[in-house]
Structures are given as C-alpha cells and as structure tokens.
Length: 276
Image 1 (cartoon, rainbow, N blue to C red):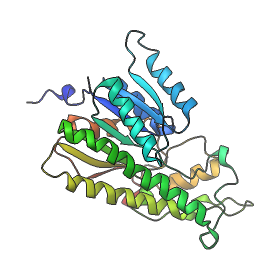
Image 2: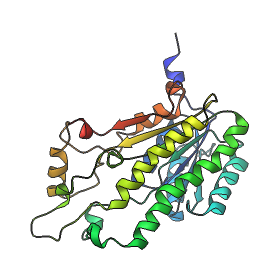
Image 3: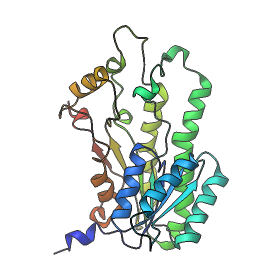
Image 4: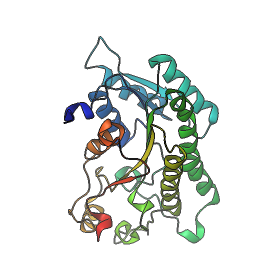
C-alpha cells in the first residue's frame, strides 16, 4: 500500500507560480511551500511578489523557500529570464502553475468597471487579453518544458475557469439602479483556449513523465457586494462562493504524485455551478 502522506510531499521540488501575488496565486504559493517545495513567486507586480515571498520566508529564517521574480508573461525574454533565474537559484524546475491572467473583477475595488457591451468591446482590450491569458500561458509552458524534457519529468497546471466550460450568466452582474455590467467576451474565449492548450500539451508529451492538467475554479469570494454575492450563490449547488483557500487541496493533488496517473484532465472545483 502506498504511503498516503508521501504522495502529497513536495520536498525538494521547485515550482513556479505565475500570478503568484494574486488572490489565488498567494494561496497556491503558500500551499506549495507548506508541502515542502521551493517556490518562485512570479508576478508582473514586483513589489507584491516580494511581499508574498517575504511572508513565506518569515517562518523559517534558516531556509529561504520562496523567491520573488518580476515577470511579464507576454514577453519571451522575460519568461526566459524567469526560468533561468529559478534554475540558477534552485537547480531544477519541477512544477509550473499558470495562474497569471487578466480576470475582470466585480468586487468593490472595481466598482463601475466592465460596462462595455459586446457590440462596442474595444479591439485593444481583446488583443491585450489574448496576449496575457493565452500567449502568456503558451510562453510559460514553452519556457519550462525545455527543462522538464531534460529532466524527463514535470507537472504543469493551467488555471482555467467555469466560464471556459459554460457561458457567463450575465444576469448576476446587474444591480438595480446601476449601469449594466458584463463579464467580457475575452474571458470565456481565453479560458476555453486554456483547455485546448492543456489537451494539446498532455498529448504532445504522451509516453513521458511530463503531465499537464487544468484546474477550474468557480467564483471566489473577495468582499463582493451583497447583491452580487446573493445572485452568484443562488446559481451554485452549494449556495455560496468559494473561500480563497478552497482550491489549495486540489492544486496540491494535481502537482503531487497523488495524481500520477492523471494528464490531459480538467479538475472542476466550482461548488456545483456547472452541474445544473
């Protein structure tokens, strides 16, 4: 019988988390460190990445488990430098978590945003989102894959969304007396593309020890207003939004040996949103 705790042990492994300073990215980084991994906190927001790394390193002054790196995932040179720095610091690359993305928000900090209807959606915004959410993920996968091929082993997890599986329910974004808001078109299109990339890479690396899977979260609570919270919660089987730490177990499962016979799959953690 397998030693169950050992299946989830990441001791000695090295992970890159893009978008590592984001709402879920911070949680992913913390989870990986707690499982024994060395973690590269990679983010466009350099200051935020260093804050996360400092927090992760504060618990053990004798060992620095987290390294902050500024990265622009849309730029090949920046992605290459991220991988080279991680390799020079830790000596190997075992895990990539692709969490960096443009994600249209509907929390209080973004009040009044996302008001463009489809007919008037700006081409510039569309192109930017494709560059970050798809091209950026492609470049990061390409960057780490070179090292994983040499090591003959590695794990990639691409963060998707329920809106990569089903269309947005635009009704939940509307509030009485306020301008109409919409989950923009790029989000569904790019997240659907994430699944396509995941399937492609999994089959491309067939008969190797390089595994590629997707993790699909539902909505995560982040101080949303009561109107939105009620509307979203009513659409889920579990009747609520996710807590920000409720994806951590699924992420650890996918990057660890616990999922060793799993590739090309999509693990959906959405409180039942897509089960109706």
